Length: 119
Image 1 (tube, rainbow, N blue to C red):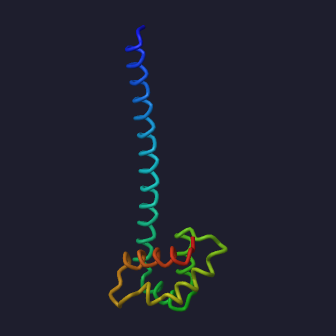
Image 2 (cartoon, rainbow, N blue to C red):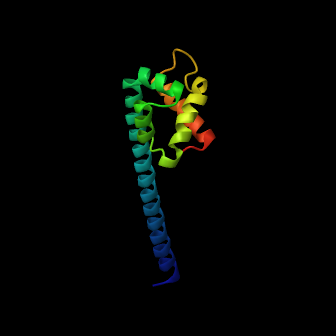
Image 3 (tube, rainbow, N blue to C red):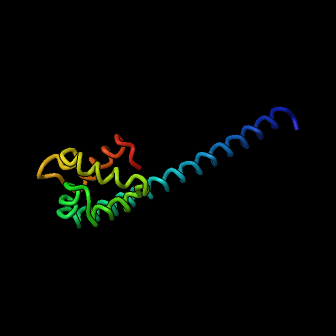
């Protein structure tokens, strides 16, 4: 084979491997996004079904529904007390008005948890 053919063959092989690696990365990212979306959907559904009780429990920082929410959010055991305190101490940032929706509560909760580094 001459150098030109070898060069073309190597270029084709390199391109093929590059495209395959991008496809694998994209699939993993898509799967992670799907898993996160599915988990948020479950949490959102839970919040919607238990909104009034959750609001009451978050105001005082304790209760069965709040404990279940912490579990659904996959909060580590060592961070749960901080999470309960955050729900009580940051209640007005979580429920910004009497019209706060489940989706707004979840977004506000994610924001406050990020700021407090509760995972």
